[in-house]
Length: 299
Ligand code: PBE
Image (cartoon, rainbow, N blue to C red; front, side, top):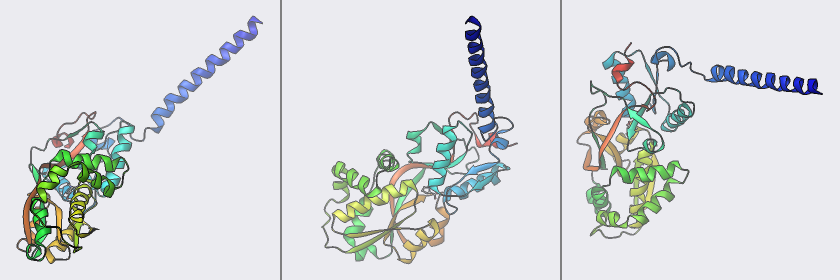
């Protein structure tokens, strides 16, 4: 009897030990990236980018050059970048992404910008509204509303956070407009309602621009416009507003991020000035990473 129980105990003890051992082996074997070696080795010398046409990807390539880094900027999409960030954070693995704010990721995770002493990513940015030439005369009401459109980074982030929670951009914009009638009233102050005139806004599928374009689109729609939002890439967006294929954009990041496009088409569009101030782009990492500056990536 005693003997039998003792055997049972031994067996259980061995099993527990074996399981614990297997757990350890698994942890090490499955972690994907070894937490050893230089930060570059841990990251396979990769910066996780977004769409190749985005200004922040070009700026990251510039940073690689400016700092003499041995890294590749891998382009994908905004959605793929935020997924890679979520996966890395779930496993507490290192990752460097091309980031910007306003953005919901700073509310969702503890993140930090890497310091950029060489200024590859520029300084503080504004997001401007740009109209096609002739919009002022053709659609003075819409022109006035887009010209008046101005909000805070926190407003944009509120919209972005809800969209990221899985709600449809159109529904979130509707709700934001309903709940912020005081701000909307400033944008539409003294403007007459129109009768179904068609207007087109172009934008890129960046989370920030999905938010802003849906909000201004909802306001224009409430003012009687038949609004179409057209999703394009960055270069084509600038081309479209400069050639008159689209009526306006609210997604011009200046002076740095889209500075090359601005210069290329200057004189062929109407710059209505900022709809948001204090935006920023740069390299963003989880706060648990021990690096603080892009210079820490130099080997
Ligand atoms: N972004 C968001 C864009 C501008 C808006 C920073 C991703 C870009 O890099 O071009």
